[in-house]
Amino acid sequence: MTASPLWTIRTLLGWSTPWLAQRGISSSRLDSELLLAKALQCRRIDLFLDPHRFLTAAELAEFKVLVKRRAAREPLAHIVGLREFWSIEFFASAEALIPRPETELLVETIVAHYSDHQAPLEILEPCVGSGAVLCALLTEYPQARGVGTDLSWQALELARRNAEKVACQDRMVLMQGDLDAPLPASALFDVIIANPPYIVSEDLAGLQPEVRDWEPHLALDGGVDGLQIVSRIPAIAKARLQSGGLVVTEIAHDQGQAVLALFQQAGFSQVEILNDYTRTNRAVKAVRIIH
Image (cartoon, rainbow, N blue to C red; front, side, top):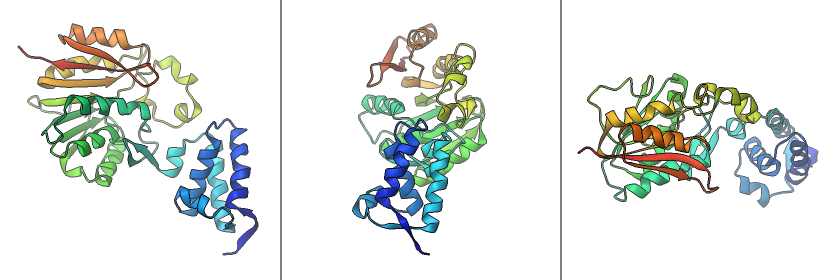
């Protein structure tokens, strides 16, 4: 392969960064660097260690393909095939929601509640999606076991790959079905953690193109009021949690009081709305006390 006489790493980033910015990509510099690292099959830091390296014609062609995909608002995580969550690198694809930094609050809440990391927790995650949340918890609690359910077999396949990637597949069971429907009636858990679909159906059209056009609507659409699936979590938690067990579910920014009331109506007394780092309602947690 011959090198391009025009394009070095530095000059290429100098072109792609404003080009992507003009097409609505707010993180155009970071995206350009990650896409170029993928095209060159190197680490991002290597771009800075050798900025005057010339690209081969094949590398240049590959980079241009990747940049065009990003300009079409395909999510960066789909293009590079990876997303970091809880300081762990997971596989990402169009089969499931891309793990968001704000969802780390769910893991933080469990970790704060159970200080003994050798606890043999039994964890259920309905709507398991990519498996990132459940895998993160199983890495935090090496004696724990987890069950993840999802309607989408494609999402379950991605979760399986991620479980293998972080070597927790022997402690994780994946089942296809609606929330806890695939489980035997006798199955009880210490932790239930969920990030169910909670977007109001009519709001889907207004989402960012990366979400609206590329992520699965099955994992986004929460029905007319956004609570179609969320509203079922309290009853599942009441039936499936051991006494003293904890449930944490992610919610939309304006659903805090409604979901808190649902848990109270289900008989939970220790219910709390959790805010993320922007002081926005992000989750509701509740403890199941059986007298």
